Image (cartoon, rainbow, N blue to C red; front, side):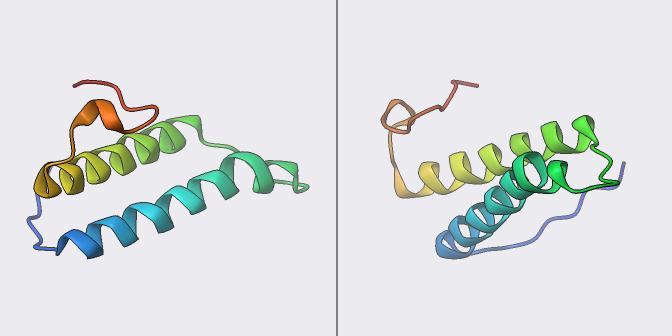
Length: 75
């Protein structure tokens, strides 16, 4: 798998994680009620892990302790 490095500001990472989280919520709870929708649990799970990685990265930069965030699991 090819790895790509991209530089983001802390604000950009926070914004991306928020937007991605909203999209994941939509896929899991709203789109699933639409006729013909096909769920992909593997993509949903990967997306949730990516959002959490982005949030942890932003928190690390801002020096926010991991235990302060609700729902965060120590890695």
